[in-house]
Image (cartoon, rainbow, N blue to C red; front, side, top):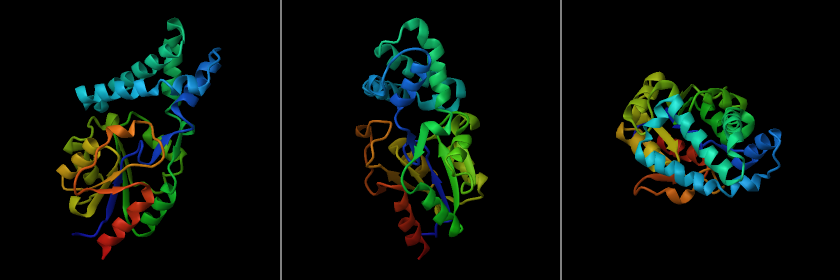
Length: 246
């Protein structure tokens, strides 16, 4: 196998996750609007949100290619959680947009342990780093706020380029951005279809990550593909890269 020269990463639940939780951010916005709710009031309804997301994704994952459609998915999901938590319907529309906007800020996210150190080590070895994520606008701003801008060579958010994972076009676009060859590239992500199957279709070696730490989406929705390298933390990418250097 060819030595690895480029490593692509998914973003959500691969490099970063909501901080301290989705419910904490929702509670902050709701309290600023004059309602007294705790993070738990919202976090307890997140399983229903996960079910809603899974249903939408299974029906047609192409919503990730358009900013307005992916925004509607989030707004509808947050509205459902707000309603279940007892927020009056007449107040939800204004609040839910503030919640959506809050997740455009780096302060609503945190990196998993070892991400920045891993990126620094990859860069020291001359490895190019790209991000390919099903995401709305502003992912580059979030990643910069979390300290990753000095290490990333490209950030590709689906809604900004009009393509989404697992479409081969978005992976081919990413390869073109870095003048990378699929046989010398890895793609690390947490989703068996979007990340593993999508990258493998174009000849990129997939690596499936499943963090031990609880992440935003229900881990029971993940399954493992036979023969796919699986890791539980981002630093575990380094020995995979090193093994391909031999």
